[in-house]
Amino acid sequence: MSTVTPVVSSSLRRTADDLFDDFLLSPEIVMIREQVREFADTVLAPHAVELNTAEESKDAFPHDILRQMASAGLYEIPYPEDVGGRGLEQRMLATATVLEELAYYSPGVASALYDGQAILVGKTLEAAPSHIRNDYLPMLIRGDIVGSFATSEPAASTDLSAQAMKTIARRVEGGFRLSGQKRWITNSCVADIMTVLCVVDGEQAMLLVDMHEDGVHVGDPDRKMGNRLQLTSDVYFDDVFVANDQVIAAPGSGLRAALASLALGRIGIGAVGVGMAQRSFDLAVAHMRERSAFGKKLAEFQHWQFRFAEHAIAIESARSLYQKAALKVDSHRVPEPEASMAKVSGSRVPVDVTRDAIQVHGGYGFLRELSADGCAYPLESIWRDCKIGEIYEGANEVQLWSIARTALGRDLTG
Image 1: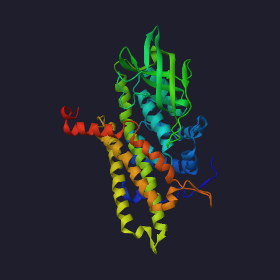
Image 2: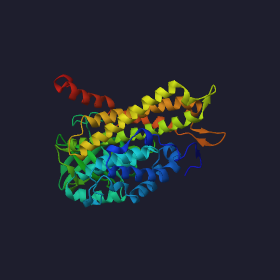
Image 3: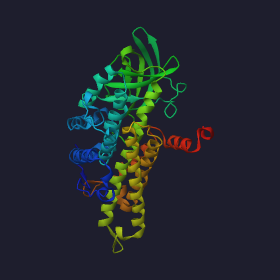
């Protein structure tokens, strides 16, 4: 692991403990937050610099962190007892809470190892036929396999219609032959299984692909601006055989299955954004309380008082929205428009807070590492990591359109 010394440690004051009151949350959720925070402080904080700055490579995937998350029972949280889960009453809210706490130190861990693994793949498997659900979910919960969720293609991402997609499965004796290319696929270069949205006879289906099958080829990890720990690679299927018993969603039901998981993923992205925003906020508060200019602490300047008071409101609003959307899921209700609202607000807030956190730090906010003392500064990586939240798992413009359709009516918005 990295020998670079972080400029701050897990002892950083958590301002959310003063600004955010847990009194509306159940004891179950409060317990989950405490457990995951302790895990993050102990396991993620000491290695956050390396986790958040390592260049993309297959070797950079943190298998050790995944195993520790599994050993700590974090993958048990989203699921019922019959597959090895904890059987919590508010599973989606608990899952989103996990994401916020993990993202406080490493949004890449939260996105790749939990949103991608536990929500996108895990929730797709949970809704699959029982033989798939009961075989694969326990393995995922134990940390025995890495999963990957494949919908996007080079020319189809926001638009996942059958007309836009080029990944085709043709029927053969005993199953299907799958051909095509997927892009932006999280964990694909290390995955054991992949849930693949494809087209069968003009209709969309979801298939479960063994990534060790002949005909599966995975490219090198993409080199991205940020969120580097969330490894994405192109995946090529060359006449790959998929048996009939590996159909997650039959032709005509594939897109519905994908969108159901992506709706939960939007809530997760909102929670990840809140975690990043809270970290930037806490770093800025600590700096403003220590740094002086013109004989005054930065925290004494009304400009920064008002700016960060506004940010506190925005963080609390985004947190409340992801919690409300998650609670709708736990109440067996459709989580819209709150899921879209949570995704938009939760992805915007870290961009806004981190920008001002960098500004109030001055040159120190622009640093990766100060050569004079070898200290690493985390705002640079948060700034790079937070932008993707406004783009992936449904671009914010699409979420705004969805909200507008509810408010104004589909007859006008389309």
